[in-house]
Image (cartoon, rainbow, N blue to C red):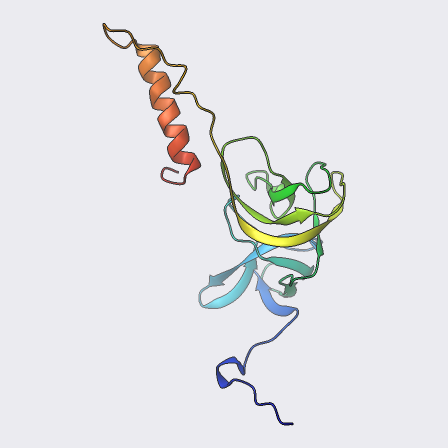
Length: 182
């Protein structure tokens, strides 16, 4: 039986791919990266936001400008570098890349309101620095902000400066959580 490949899929490839490192990715095997275009050249970059869609793992890193190997996890589990500890079943999200050493690592979803990219769920308890086993389930996770509006107590007279400030902060937090305000 001859099976013809769908011609629209003739140049696809499973497994690892070779791309250029947009920054120094030496020794960052097991870290998550995203694909970027550097002057039309496909490159791998560490996430710069906890919302970045970092779908690739560094297989074999290297200095900026060098060809490296990255791979997109498939339906099988994979390992990624952890920042902090957690337990089996924890929803994992990107660690805050504002600390350069944490870019590309994962943490258990925090209580802090916001939107985060999650590569999946921990399949084991894990400690800081460990390559934690992850079952892929990529998505954006939203942690709701606390209800700070209900605590406001406006009087019949006029709102006070602190009440107006608290209202402003509460509305801002809600808008930031839902990605309307960044």
